Length: 448
Ligand code: SF4
Image (cartoon, rainbow, N blue to C red):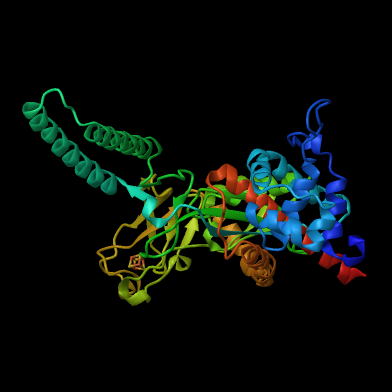
Protein backbone atom coordinates (compact mmCIF):
# COMPACT_ATOMS: atom_id res chain seq x y z
CA UNK A 1 0.00 0.00 0.00
CA UNK A 2 1.22 3.50 -0.77
CA UNK A 3 0.43 4.46 2.82
CA UNK A 4 3.31 2.22 3.95
CA UNK A 5 5.75 4.46 2.10
CA UNK A 6 4.64 7.68 3.79
CA UNK A 7 6.20 8.13 7.23
CA UNK A 8 3.81 8.49 10.15
CA UNK A 9 5.24 11.93 10.96
CA UNK A 10 5.61 13.17 7.37
CA UNK A 11 4.47 16.81 6.90
CA UNK A 12 2.27 15.65 4.01
CA UNK A 13 -0.03 14.05 6.58
CA UNK A 14 -0.42 17.43 8.34
CA UNK A 15 -1.28 19.07 5.00
CA UNK A 16 -3.84 16.33 4.33
CA UNK A 17 -5.46 16.66 7.76
CA UNK A 18 -5.55 20.48 7.63
CA UNK A 19 -7.25 20.57 4.22
CA UNK A 20 -9.69 17.82 5.20
CA UNK A 21 -10.92 20.07 8.02
CA UNK A 22 -11.52 23.11 5.79
CA UNK A 23 -15.00 24.19 4.78
CA UNK A 24 -14.14 24.76 1.12
CA UNK A 25 -17.66 25.86 0.21
CA UNK A 26 -17.57 28.62 2.83
CA UNK A 27 -14.12 29.69 1.68
CA UNK A 28 -15.56 30.09 -1.82
CA UNK A 29 -13.69 27.44 -3.81
CA UNK A 30 -15.14 26.71 -7.26
CA UNK A 31 -16.89 23.37 -7.56
CA UNK A 32 -16.87 22.83 -3.80
CA UNK A 33 -20.32 21.28 -4.24
CA UNK A 34 -20.36 19.03 -7.34
CA UNK A 35 -23.34 19.33 -9.70
CA UNK A 36 -25.86 16.51 -9.70
CA UNK A 37 -25.29 15.81 -13.39
CA UNK A 38 -22.30 15.67 -15.73
CA UNK A 39 -18.77 14.48 -15.23
CA UNK A 40 -17.66 14.95 -11.59
CA UNK A 41 -14.98 17.66 -11.24
CA UNK A 42 -11.82 17.38 -9.15
CA UNK A 43 -12.51 18.04 -5.51
CA UNK A 44 -10.96 21.48 -4.75
CA UNK A 45 -9.52 19.96 -1.56
CA UNK A 46 -7.35 17.63 -3.67
CA UNK A 47 -5.97 20.46 -5.80
CA UNK A 48 -5.40 22.62 -2.73
CA UNK A 49 -3.55 19.75 -1.05
CA UNK A 50 -1.40 19.37 -4.16
CA UNK A 51 -0.51 23.07 -4.26
CA UNK A 52 0.34 23.32 -0.54
CA UNK A 53 2.49 20.20 -0.82
CA UNK A 54 4.10 21.63 -3.97
CA UNK A 55 5.01 24.99 -2.37
CA UNK A 56 6.23 23.13 0.70
CA UNK A 57 8.62 21.14 -1.52
CA UNK A 58 9.68 23.93 -3.92
CA UNK A 59 7.52 22.55 -6.77
CA UNK A 60 5.33 25.40 -7.99
CA UNK A 61 4.72 25.09 -11.73
CA UNK A 62 1.60 23.28 -12.91
CA UNK A 63 3.57 21.10 -15.33
CA UNK A 64 5.96 19.95 -12.63
CA UNK A 65 3.07 19.28 -10.25
CA UNK A 66 1.41 17.20 -12.98
CA UNK A 67 4.59 15.10 -13.28
CA UNK A 68 4.94 14.69 -9.51
CA UNK A 69 1.39 13.28 -9.30
CA UNK A 70 2.55 10.34 -11.44
CA UNK A 71 5.90 9.58 -9.89
CA UNK A 72 6.16 10.97 -6.35
CA UNK A 73 4.91 8.64 -3.62
CA UNK A 74 3.82 11.50 -1.32
CA UNK A 75 1.88 13.23 -4.11
CA UNK A 76 0.26 9.92 -5.12
CA UNK A 77 -0.72 9.27 -1.50
CA UNK A 78 -2.01 12.81 -1.03
CA UNK A 79 -4.21 12.72 -4.14
CA UNK A 80 -5.11 9.03 -3.80
CA UNK A 81 -3.45 8.43 -7.18
CA UNK A 82 -5.47 11.04 -9.03
CA UNK A 83 -3.41 12.69 -11.76
CA UNK A 84 -4.91 16.00 -12.91
CA UNK A 85 -3.36 17.54 -16.03
CA UNK A 86 -1.37 20.76 -15.84
CA UNK A 87 -4.18 22.92 -17.19
CA UNK A 88 -6.59 21.78 -14.48
CA UNK A 89 -3.90 22.48 -11.89
CA UNK A 90 -3.06 25.93 -13.30
CA UNK A 91 -6.74 26.90 -13.68
CA UNK A 92 -7.38 26.01 -10.04
CA UNK A 93 -4.72 28.48 -8.83
CA UNK A 94 -5.90 31.16 -11.27
CA UNK A 95 -9.61 30.86 -10.45
CA UNK A 96 -9.46 30.44 -6.66
CA UNK A 97 -7.19 33.27 -5.53
CA UNK A 98 -9.46 34.69 -2.82
CA UNK A 99 -10.36 31.22 -1.49
CA UNK A 100 -6.66 30.24 -1.28
CA UNK A 101 -5.94 33.45 0.67
CA UNK A 102 -8.84 32.43 2.94
CA UNK A 103 -7.30 28.97 3.47
CA UNK A 104 -4.02 30.64 4.51
CA UNK A 105 -5.97 32.80 6.98
CA UNK A 106 -7.82 29.69 8.28
CA UNK A 107 -4.48 28.14 9.32
CA UNK A 108 -3.54 31.30 11.25
CA UNK A 109 -6.93 31.15 13.00
CA UNK A 110 -6.29 27.50 13.85
CA UNK A 111 -2.95 28.49 15.43
CA UNK A 112 -4.65 31.31 17.32
CA UNK A 113 -7.32 28.98 18.68
CA UNK A 114 -4.58 26.51 19.68
CA UNK A 115 -3.05 29.31 21.79
CA UNK A 116 0.18 29.51 19.79
CA UNK A 117 0.27 33.32 19.72
CA UNK A 118 1.28 34.01 23.31
CA UNK A 119 3.58 37.00 23.01
CA UNK A 120 2.01 40.29 22.10
CA UNK A 121 5.07 41.40 20.16
CA UNK A 122 5.09 41.13 16.39
CA UNK A 123 7.91 42.03 14.03
CA UNK A 124 7.17 43.69 10.68
CA UNK A 125 9.40 43.29 7.69
CA UNK A 126 9.27 43.67 3.93
CA UNK A 127 11.15 42.07 1.07
CA UNK A 128 11.15 42.53 -2.69
CA UNK A 129 10.02 39.60 -4.83
CA UNK A 130 10.69 39.62 -8.58
CA UNK A 131 7.74 39.88 -10.96
CA UNK A 132 7.45 37.72 -14.09
CA UNK A 133 7.98 40.72 -16.42
CA UNK A 134 11.55 41.45 -17.48
CA UNK A 135 13.47 44.69 -16.91
CA UNK A 136 13.02 45.50 -20.62
CA UNK A 137 9.30 45.97 -20.02
CA UNK A 138 9.82 48.94 -17.67
CA UNK A 139 8.61 52.00 -19.61
CA UNK A 140 8.98 55.62 -18.57
CA UNK A 141 7.73 58.71 -20.41
CA UNK A 142 11.08 59.01 -22.18
CA UNK A 143 11.01 55.42 -23.48
CA UNK A 144 7.38 55.76 -24.61
CA UNK A 145 8.06 59.05 -26.46
CA UNK A 146 11.12 57.50 -28.13
CA UNK A 147 9.20 54.47 -29.37
CA UNK A 148 6.23 56.59 -30.51
CA UNK A 149 8.59 58.76 -32.60
CA UNK A 150 10.14 55.62 -34.12
CA UNK A 151 6.68 54.17 -34.94
CA UNK A 152 5.51 57.46 -36.46
CA UNK A 153 8.57 57.43 -38.73
CA UNK A 154 7.89 53.87 -39.85
CA UNK A 155 4.18 54.53 -40.45
CA UNK A 156 5.06 57.63 -42.52
CA UNK A 157 7.53 55.55 -44.59
CA UNK A 158 4.91 52.88 -45.24
CA UNK A 159 2.29 55.47 -46.22
CA UNK A 160 4.70 57.17 -48.60
CA UNK A 161 5.46 53.75 -50.14
CA UNK A 162 1.74 53.07 -50.49
CA UNK A 163 1.22 56.42 -52.26
CA UNK A 164 4.00 55.59 -54.71
CA UNK A 165 2.51 52.11 -55.29
CA UNK A 166 -0.98 53.54 -55.82
CA UNK A 167 0.32 55.98 -58.39
CA UNK A 168 2.04 53.17 -60.30
CA UNK A 169 -0.65 50.45 -59.95
CA UNK A 170 -3.87 52.02 -58.60
CA UNK A 171 -5.87 48.72 -58.45
CA UNK A 172 -3.26 46.62 -56.70
CA UNK A 173 -3.06 47.65 -53.03
CA UNK A 174 -0.50 45.43 -51.22
CA UNK A 175 -2.19 43.72 -48.25
CA UNK A 176 1.06 43.06 -46.39
CA UNK A 177 1.78 46.79 -46.13
CA UNK A 178 -1.69 47.71 -44.85
CA UNK A 179 -1.44 44.88 -42.30
CA UNK A 180 1.96 46.18 -41.16
CA UNK A 181 0.57 49.72 -40.80
CA UNK A 182 -2.38 48.41 -38.76
CA UNK A 183 0.04 46.56 -36.45
CA UNK A 184 2.20 49.68 -35.98
CA UNK A 185 -0.88 51.79 -35.25
CA UNK A 186 -2.12 49.22 -32.74
CA UNK A 187 1.26 49.39 -30.99
CA UNK A 188 1.07 53.16 -31.03
CA UNK A 189 -2.38 53.02 -29.45
CA UNK A 190 -1.04 50.70 -26.74
CA UNK A 191 1.81 53.14 -26.00
CA UNK A 192 -0.74 55.96 -25.76
CA UNK A 193 -2.69 53.90 -23.21
CA UNK A 194 0.49 53.34 -21.16
CA UNK A 195 1.29 57.07 -21.25
CA UNK A 196 -2.26 57.90 -20.06
CA UNK A 197 -1.89 55.42 -17.21
CA UNK A 198 1.37 57.07 -16.14
CA UNK A 199 -0.35 60.46 -16.11
CA UNK A 200 -3.40 59.18 -14.25
CA UNK A 201 -1.40 57.41 -11.53
CA UNK A 202 1.42 59.95 -11.28
CA UNK A 203 4.09 57.25 -11.48
CA UNK A 204 7.40 57.64 -13.29
CA UNK A 205 7.37 54.10 -14.77
CA UNK A 206 4.89 51.46 -15.83
CA UNK A 207 5.69 47.78 -16.43
CA UNK A 208 4.23 46.73 -19.76
CA UNK A 209 2.36 43.43 -19.54
CA UNK A 210 2.30 43.45 -15.74
CA UNK A 211 1.03 46.85 -14.75
CA UNK A 212 0.69 46.13 -11.02
CA UNK A 213 4.46 45.55 -10.73
CA UNK A 214 6.83 48.44 -10.02
CA UNK A 215 10.56 48.81 -10.59
CA UNK A 216 12.02 48.37 -7.11
CA UNK A 217 15.54 48.31 -5.71
CA UNK A 218 18.23 50.35 -4.07
CA UNK A 219 20.85 52.68 -5.45
CA UNK A 220 21.29 53.71 -9.06
CA UNK A 221 21.38 50.19 -10.55
CA UNK A 222 18.49 49.30 -12.93
CA UNK A 223 15.50 48.28 -10.85
CA UNK A 224 13.71 45.06 -11.85
CA UNK A 225 9.88 44.87 -11.81
CA UNK A 226 8.97 43.59 -8.35
CA UNK A 227 6.43 43.50 -5.57
CA UNK A 228 6.96 44.49 -1.95
CA UNK A 229 5.90 41.54 0.25
CA UNK A 230 5.07 42.45 3.84
CA UNK A 231 4.89 40.07 6.78
CA UNK A 232 4.10 40.45 10.47
CA UNK A 233 5.66 37.66 12.49
CA UNK A 234 4.86 36.57 16.03
CA UNK A 235 8.16 37.13 17.88
CA UNK A 236 7.54 34.20 20.20
CA UNK A 237 6.79 31.42 17.70
CA UNK A 238 8.05 32.76 14.36
CA UNK A 239 4.62 32.15 12.77
CA UNK A 240 3.46 34.65 10.15
CA UNK A 241 0.33 36.30 11.54
CA UNK A 242 -0.47 38.46 8.54
CA UNK A 243 1.06 39.11 5.14
CA UNK A 244 0.37 41.30 2.15
CA UNK A 245 1.71 41.74 -1.37
CA UNK A 246 1.88 45.43 -2.25
CA UNK A 247 3.10 47.65 -5.07
CA UNK A 248 4.63 50.15 -2.61
CA UNK A 249 8.31 50.58 -3.52
CA UNK A 250 9.27 51.28 0.12
CA UNK A 251 8.02 50.28 3.60
CA UNK A 252 7.54 53.88 4.69
CA UNK A 253 3.72 53.96 4.41
CA UNK A 254 3.05 50.44 5.65
CA UNK A 255 3.52 50.59 9.42
CA UNK A 256 -0.09 51.35 10.34
CA UNK A 257 -1.90 49.21 7.72
CA UNK A 258 0.21 46.15 8.62
CA UNK A 259 0.00 46.71 12.39
CA UNK A 260 -3.76 47.23 12.29
CA UNK A 261 -4.41 44.17 10.11
CA UNK A 262 -2.22 42.08 12.46
CA UNK A 263 -4.11 43.28 15.51
CA UNK A 264 -7.41 42.43 13.81
CA UNK A 265 -6.19 38.89 13.03
CA UNK A 266 -5.08 38.39 16.63
CA UNK A 267 -8.32 39.96 17.91
CA UNK A 268 -6.33 41.81 20.57
CA UNK A 269 -6.93 45.28 21.93
CA UNK A 270 -3.25 45.93 22.51
CA UNK A 271 -0.25 45.02 20.48
CA UNK A 272 3.43 46.01 20.27
CA UNK A 273 5.01 46.06 16.82
CA UNK A 274 8.71 46.39 16.12
CA UNK A 275 10.14 47.24 12.71
CA UNK A 276 13.33 48.58 11.14
CA UNK A 277 14.02 52.24 10.38
CA UNK A 278 12.47 51.91 6.90
CA UNK A 279 9.04 52.02 8.59
CA UNK A 280 9.79 55.25 10.48
CA UNK A 281 6.86 57.54 9.70
CA UNK A 282 5.41 60.04 12.18
CA UNK A 283 1.86 60.08 10.80
CA UNK A 284 1.69 56.27 10.82
CA UNK A 285 3.17 56.06 14.34
CA UNK A 286 0.57 58.55 15.53
CA UNK A 287 -2.24 56.50 13.91
CA UNK A 288 -0.92 53.32 15.61
CA UNK A 289 -0.87 54.97 19.04
CA UNK A 290 -4.39 56.30 18.62
CA UNK A 291 -5.52 52.76 17.77
CA UNK A 292 -3.95 51.11 20.84
CA UNK A 293 -0.90 49.77 18.98
CA UNK A 294 2.56 50.49 20.41
CA UNK A 295 5.03 51.01 17.56
CA UNK A 296 8.79 50.58 18.19
CA UNK A 297 10.76 51.85 15.21
CA UNK A 298 14.16 53.56 15.28
CA UNK A 299 14.22 57.08 13.87
CA UNK A 300 15.29 57.36 10.27
CA UNK A 301 16.73 60.86 10.25
CA UNK A 302 18.97 62.37 7.65
CA UNK A 303 22.44 63.18 8.98
CA UNK A 304 23.67 66.76 8.87
CA UNK A 305 26.87 66.40 6.82
CA UNK A 306 27.75 70.07 6.87
CA UNK A 307 30.97 70.92 8.69
CA UNK A 308 32.26 67.37 8.14
CA UNK A 309 29.36 65.97 10.17
CA UNK A 310 30.81 67.50 13.37
CA UNK A 311 28.14 70.17 13.94
CA UNK A 312 25.58 70.03 16.77
CA UNK A 313 22.83 67.57 15.92
CA UNK A 314 19.16 68.07 16.85
CA UNK A 315 19.58 66.46 20.27
CA UNK A 316 21.59 69.52 21.33
CA UNK A 317 18.45 71.67 20.91
CA UNK A 318 15.55 71.64 23.40
CA UNK A 319 11.97 72.11 22.25
CA UNK A 320 9.71 74.31 24.38
CA UNK A 321 6.10 73.34 23.75
CA UNK A 322 4.62 76.37 25.54
CA UNK A 323 6.31 78.90 23.24
CA UNK A 324 6.73 76.58 20.23
CA UNK A 325 10.42 77.44 20.01
CA UNK A 326 13.76 75.62 20.27
CA UNK A 327 16.53 76.60 22.70
CA UNK A 328 20.05 76.19 21.33
CA UNK A 329 23.29 75.26 23.22
CA UNK A 330 24.05 79.01 23.56
CA UNK A 331 20.68 79.45 25.32
CA UNK A 332 19.20 81.44 22.43
CA UNK A 333 15.89 80.80 20.72
CA UNK A 334 15.05 79.33 17.30
CA UNK A 335 11.60 80.52 16.23
CA UNK A 336 9.04 79.07 13.83
CA UNK A 337 9.80 80.36 10.36
CA UNK A 338 7.97 78.30 7.74
CA UNK A 339 5.67 75.28 7.26
CA UNK A 340 7.08 72.81 4.71
CA UNK A 341 4.02 70.73 3.81
CA UNK A 342 5.77 68.60 1.21
CA UNK A 343 8.22 67.33 3.83
CA UNK A 344 5.56 67.34 6.59
CA UNK A 345 7.67 69.51 8.88
CA UNK A 346 8.07 73.03 10.32
CA UNK A 347 11.26 75.02 9.84
CA UNK A 348 12.73 76.89 12.84
CA UNK A 349 15.46 79.50 12.53
CA UNK A 350 17.84 81.19 14.97
CA UNK A 351 17.26 84.94 15.03
CA UNK A 352 20.90 86.04 15.35
CA UNK A 353 24.01 83.86 15.38
CA UNK A 354 26.54 86.54 14.37
CA UNK A 355 28.29 86.96 17.73
CA UNK A 356 27.88 83.41 19.04
CA UNK A 357 31.07 81.78 20.37
CA UNK A 358 29.67 78.30 19.48
CA UNK A 359 28.93 79.15 15.87
CA UNK A 360 31.85 77.10 14.48
CA UNK A 361 30.36 74.01 16.16
CA UNK A 362 26.81 74.80 15.09
CA UNK A 363 26.49 75.96 11.50
CA UNK A 364 28.43 76.96 8.40
CA UNK A 365 25.55 79.22 7.29
CA UNK A 366 24.74 82.72 8.48
CA UNK A 367 22.35 81.28 11.07
CA UNK A 368 21.18 77.88 12.23
CA UNK A 369 17.99 76.19 10.95
CA UNK A 370 16.21 73.17 12.39
CA UNK A 371 13.19 71.18 11.20
CA UNK A 372 10.51 69.58 13.34
CA UNK A 373 8.24 66.88 11.90
CA UNK A 374 4.46 67.39 12.17
CA UNK A 375 4.38 64.19 14.27
CA UNK A 376 7.70 64.71 16.03
CA UNK A 377 6.31 63.64 19.42
CA UNK A 378 5.19 60.26 18.09
CA UNK A 379 8.58 59.78 16.39
CA UNK A 380 10.43 60.64 19.60
CA UNK A 381 8.28 58.31 21.70
CA UNK A 382 8.87 55.50 19.19
CA UNK A 383 12.61 56.09 19.19
CA UNK A 384 12.70 56.28 23.00
CA UNK A 385 11.05 52.83 23.29
CA UNK A 386 13.72 51.33 21.04
CA UNK A 387 16.52 52.97 23.02
CA UNK A 388 14.99 51.85 26.34
CA UNK A 389 15.05 48.18 25.25
CA UNK A 390 18.00 47.44 22.92
CA UNK A 391 16.96 43.77 22.82
CA UNK A 392 13.88 44.74 20.78
CA UNK A 393 15.84 45.11 17.54
CA UNK A 394 17.59 41.77 18.09
CA UNK A 395 14.17 40.12 18.58
CA UNK A 396 12.98 41.81 15.38
CA UNK A 397 15.89 40.44 13.38
CA UNK A 398 15.45 36.90 14.75
CA UNK A 399 11.68 36.87 14.14
CA UNK A 400 11.21 38.76 10.89
CA UNK A 401 14.15 37.77 8.72
CA UNK A 402 13.96 33.99 9.11
CA UNK A 403 10.53 33.54 7.39
CA UNK A 404 11.71 35.46 4.31
CA UNK A 405 14.79 33.23 4.12
CA UNK A 406 12.61 30.11 4.08
CA UNK A 407 10.00 31.53 1.69
CA UNK A 408 12.67 32.74 -0.73
CA UNK A 409 14.20 29.25 -0.73
CA UNK A 410 10.72 27.84 -1.54
CA UNK A 411 10.25 30.35 -4.39
CA UNK A 412 13.54 30.12 -6.30
CA UNK A 413 15.12 33.10 -4.55
CA UNK A 414 11.95 35.19 -4.41
CA UNK A 415 10.44 35.01 -7.91
CA UNK A 416 6.76 34.87 -8.70
CA UNK A 417 5.38 32.64 -11.45
CA UNK A 418 2.12 34.54 -11.89
CA UNK A 419 1.41 38.12 -12.89
CA UNK A 420 -0.16 41.14 -11.21
CA UNK A 421 -1.44 41.51 -7.67
CA UNK A 422 -4.21 38.92 -8.06
CA UNK A 423 -1.81 36.15 -9.08
CA UNK A 424 1.03 37.11 -6.74
CA UNK A 425 -1.29 37.34 -3.72
CA UNK A 426 -2.50 33.80 -4.42
CA UNK A 427 1.07 32.55 -4.74
CA UNK A 428 2.22 34.30 -1.57
CA UNK A 429 -0.75 32.87 0.37
CA UNK A 430 0.40 29.37 -0.67
CA UNK A 431 4.01 30.14 0.33
CA UNK A 432 2.97 31.58 3.71
CA UNK A 433 0.63 28.65 4.35
CA UNK A 434 3.41 26.17 3.55
CA UNK A 435 5.84 28.13 5.78
CA UNK A 436 3.36 28.30 8.68
CA UNK A 437 2.63 24.56 8.45
CA UNK A 438 6.37 23.84 8.51
CA UNK A 439 6.83 26.19 11.47
CA UNK A 440 3.89 24.68 13.41
CA UNK A 441 5.33 21.17 12.86
CA UNK A 442 8.71 22.33 14.19
CA UNK A 443 7.11 24.00 17.23
CA UNK A 444 5.18 20.82 18.02
CA UNK A 445 8.35 18.71 17.62
CA UNK A 446 10.25 21.07 19.96
CA UNK A 447 7.50 20.82 22.60
CA UNK A 448 7.24 17.00 22.38
S1 SF4 B 1 25.15 79.43 16.21
FE1 SF4 B 1 23.14 80.25 16.62
S2 SF4 B 1 21.88 78.46 17.01
FE2 SF4 B 1 23.98 77.82 17.10
S3 SF4 B 1 24.51 77.90 19.24
FE3 SF4 B 1 25.08 79.86 18.40
S4 SF4 B 1 23.32 81.15 18.64
FE4 SF4 B 1 22.65 79.09 19.00
